[in-house]
Amino acid sequence: MIKRDSVRSMRVGVVGCGLIGGSIALSLSNSGHAVFVNDRAENEIKIKKQIPKAAFRKSMSELCSEKPEVVFICVPSAFVVDVMREVAELVDGGTIITDVAGIKQPILDAARGLIPEDVLFVGGHPMAGSEKSGVEAAQPFLFQNAVYVLSPLKNYRAEAIAALLSAIEQLGARILMMDAAQHDRIAAATSHLPQLIAVELVNLLKDFSSEDEHFNTLAAGGFRDMTRIASSEYTVWDDVIRANSANIDAMLSAFIERLLTLDADVISGNDRGIAAEFEHARLARAGIRKGGKGFLHPLYDLYVVVEDKVGVLKEITSSLADVGVNIKDIELLKVREGSGGMFRLSFDTQDIQDRASELLEQRGFQILRKEFEG
Image 1 (cartoon, rainbow, N blue to C red):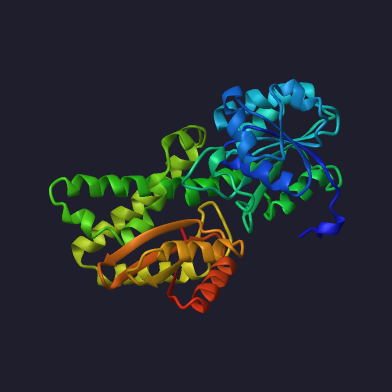
Image 2: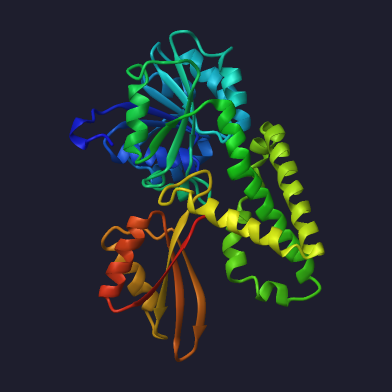
């Protein structure tokens, strides 16, 4: 990680201020960099409110006239190429253009015919996100401990893209260089397929719950955690699914094949085969890295046992806010009038989870811990 006293101020452009673009602009402007943002005119007021240290520019030409060293294109995947074309025609030589789309090969293919020789393009995909969208959901620590994949158009020297590398490291992310085709294949397996599975699991439950409401009643625990990502809006996914359809189809076919084998084992009573699948999965999951953000965002949960009294939630949230601990998600799990209940608090990293647990225990709260990755 770059030491703060060795970081020079940079000029950065951000095109598109939704969750990702807004969080990049918020984080880098808070760190003292000159950040210029461009978005639709109707979003200007809320962008200025959420990211007060960034300068809003009404047009692409105004943004590029500020001579940014790096321009982050943070628009939906379907519009990246059009924005790339416009930016590439306006920026000075030596400028680094990058995107944040969840699919890389089609964008790299387009860049080969659009990017001038004296301009650099590096495809990017930050492995961070939220169930919420829009600039109102932007947060400066969204990328902390996240893997940030970079797929350069050419084999650039590290010195040539140093400004981009520095900006990403200052976001708190960890850089991983990866071939675009490799990225898209892995994303299909670890992000796009799980998203589709979660959607269909929830829809399956909905079909059965129309006949028996207890399906919903009993799904309130592990099922709900497992399918958290099913809350995502399709507008976030439509361009990605369309652009990566071949890889997604391959992963769906492989998954369906495994399900058919499992179904046959269940029907035939092949306990040994099913047990082997469980054991293989247990060992494989143990080898998946913990404590970071990958294609799916892990959450670290604390369960806080509370008394039934006025102001208990405010006491919890204020205690954490006073020391700068950000709660990613909060849910009232159970409550019994007169005896209390339990809140689930979710955090971005294990370090934050540990800090919150220690603080709340010092305040006299009973804490139960559970880690959920997915």
